[in-house]
Length: 119
Image (cartoon, rainbow, N blue to C red; front, side, top):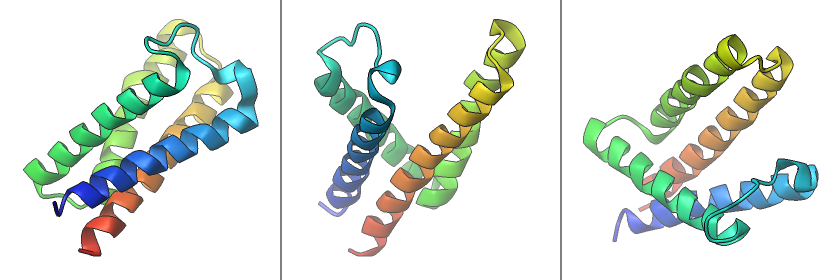
């Protein structure tokens, strides 16, 4: 059960961040057709991501925050840069998405690390 607390904490942190940002940004940021409805889909997606994050931390031996930063930069490299270069996304929009993405990774990874070290 030693990994249960950080997994649940990271999942809860991501759901909380999603809720806060959905209240700030409103309907403009809502996906058009979530599979199970908005919030059940958010919960499922975040749990899949948290389990992947836990697997990466456990299999590589990296710290939680280091893993979060690496995955955050990977997300930027995989979606932000091609979005600007191939899809015509505005640079400012890509930069804001990168900051929000990194914020989610760092806060959630920090929560995971904090709860892992408090065992």
